[in-house]
Image (cartoon, rainbow, N blue to C red; front, top):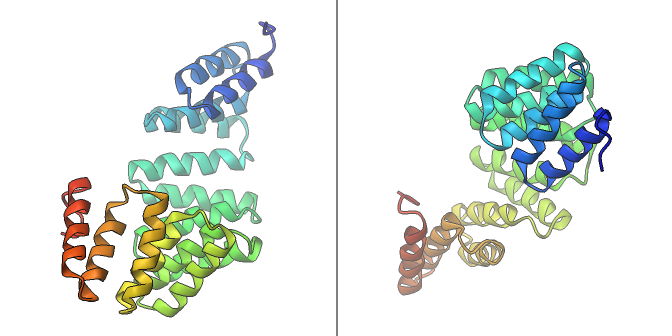
Amino acid sequence: MIDPKNVAAYANRGEAYRVQGEDDRAITEFNAAIKLDGKYASAYDDRGIALTDKGEYDRAIGDFDTALKLDPKMGGAYIHRAIAYESKGAHDRALADFDEAIKLDPKNPVTYVNRGDIYLDKKDLDRAIADYNQAIMVNGMYAEAFNNRGSAYARKGDFDRAVADFDNAIKLNPRLGSAYANRGTALLKSNQFARAVADFNDALARDSKDALSLYNRGVAKQKMGNQVGGDLDVINARSIDPQVGR
C-alpha cells in the first residue's frame, strides 16, 4: 500500500510502469506525484518521457519545459526534450538542447551520439563524425558510436573506414543487427558480394523482417550470378516493404 503523501513513491511506481511499457499507468502515477508537489521537477521529466513514448510530443515538450524551469541544471530534461523535438522533425531545436546537455555533462557519450545522428540525418557528415569521435573518446566500448560513425563514413564513400568501424561495433556487441546490415551494405558497394551475403544472413538471423537486408542480399546474389536466388530475395523483401529498393 503506497503512502498517499509520499511523492517519491508515486514517482517511483510511475517509473516502474513506464519501464514495463505501461505508459498510461505511469502517467497516472506521475500526475499524482505532481498533484502532491507541483515543484517536483523529476516527475515532470518522467511524465514527459512517457508522453514521448506515446507520441504526444507537444505535451511532452511542455513537461520538459516545466522541469527545466524548476531545475535549469537538469541535463536529462534537455536530452529528453531534444528527443521529442527530433521526433517532431524540429532538428535545430533538438540540436540546441543537445548542446545544452553537453555543456552540463560533457562526459555523456550518448548525447554526442544523439547529436551526431541529427547531423547524419542533415547530411552534415563531418560534424556527425566529430560527435561520434567524441563519444568514442569518452567511451571506447560504445558499439553504437562505432556503428553510426561507420554509417557516416559509408555515406562519404569511405568504405574501408566504414567497414573497420562496423567490425569494431560487432566485436563490442555481436547482437547489434544493424551493424551487420550496415557492413553488408558497405561490402556490397565495394563489390565484395560473398562477404556482403554473409553479413546480410547475420542481419536477417537477428531480424527476419529486415526488408532492406533481404533486398540487398538479393542484389548481392544477383551480382554473384545467382539470379534465381537473388530474384526470390527481392520478391520476398517487397512482400514486407513494397517500396524497398525503389
